[in-house]
Image (cartoon, rainbow, N blue to C red; front, top):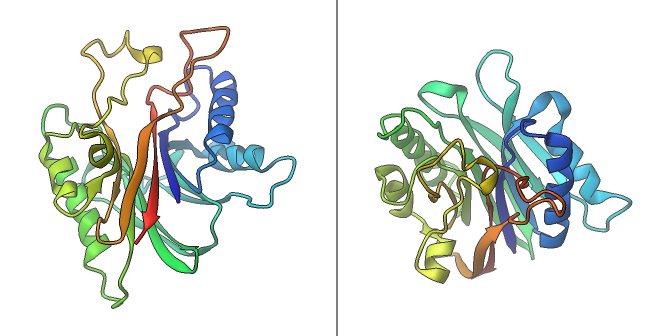
Length: 251
């Protein structure tokens, strides 16, 4: 199965033009599951993309599950699109600032159940992990300390807002393996794309990840996705983040 993650950058930075780039890139990828972050709720952004991908008709349509931030009157959230049947789904409230949440969908793939988690950790404070580390620990506890007695096959994707060397990412990698690291031995830089380099001149860093439980999956391929600029404007990219796509065999 193929899992793709992408921070949508909500409706900023010439969204109508970026929308077309994103839809074209996702059509080319043909991922089974797509995890979005920075989903803009007032325009039904995730549903709009799914409807475009499903048009004019599809024998494997995407189904959408959105998880809103827990702040009052949220306008942003995260979302998962899945072509596989969604057996159940839920949202997790994360501690700290920003109203951050994680979500889980359980899907059926080839007669086996797979749990996919999607997360967008807080981007502040800069330079320390005092908020993100408790958030990822809460997420991992939610994933691995479940009391339902069911053995689960976990995939985790999202924007961690943390480079690979940070305690936040190391905590996740203590339980899960990175698809890019397993395939290539290194995490690719995902932020910023050239569209946002002027605002973030420090160079490109890895902030986005696709992680898996090696007891249940083998990473067959992994790479950056949504990397092509507008054909008539080399300054415009699908987002300020590159996406990541990974393909897995289920063990």
